[in-house]
Image (cartoon, rainbow, N blue to C red; front, side, top):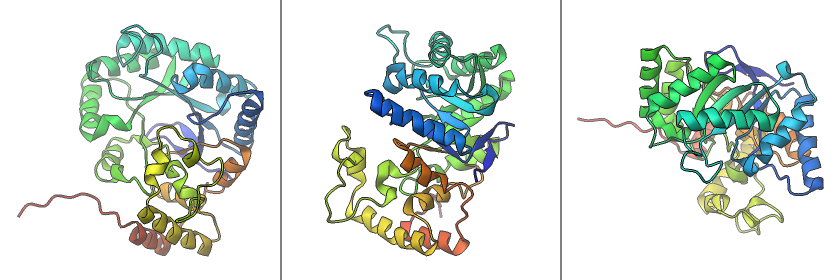
Length: 326
């Protein structure tokens, strides 16, 4: 059964498992039908959080998600989108300026056929725009009712998050509600500093790439060919291929044994491991077909025993960074 958590210190409740649109394949009616079936299965199984972005498929992902969700009560689901990447050739059609944010939210609302977006993220950090301008624009959108909450991406980093909080407090702006970083068993950098900052300020974390591009599904085996049709066989930027080292595959093999002892799969173990932290509001999963989603759903409410968590930490060998002088 699906379980729900608050996003940071806000009153917004989201399902522990969310569905993201980054990898949604809409090329052709058959693939679009599979994507639609996946979204509907998610909703029917209690998932109420659907993540998107203006940059995904040139806006088509927003239009697709809006068409599917239109069949459901608006109050029953939470939808997010993002702003930063270019939406046209003009010098002002990208970034986090007040102009682009104001124009882009209207584009997103039109794409999704919605009156408001629940959660609006800054997709990246904009070095060309003062942070105060960006935060004032986002807070103004909350006042206008076009967005209800806002958040930022991992690229803001710890120092920028603290700076943002000072600006928000100085001008009494609507608070930052969420951070969307990459976080999984193989990439734990937010545990060094960022996770603590989010806990201090009540910023909920909604991580993406929880299965490390598919590495943590357990389908890749050392010394064996990549599974046919897997991401490692066709991904243009080869992100997952760079992760498929012997060291990482050995770690996954060891953790698969832990998962088996707990009566679950590697994927469920990886998702539940992220949810062990209370500051995690929801895990954004990518499911290209219903069968993948069905497996992910089992992670909601799954508790990893303390001794198993300790064994996982031993396998991963992660040590949070601390610098001691003297």
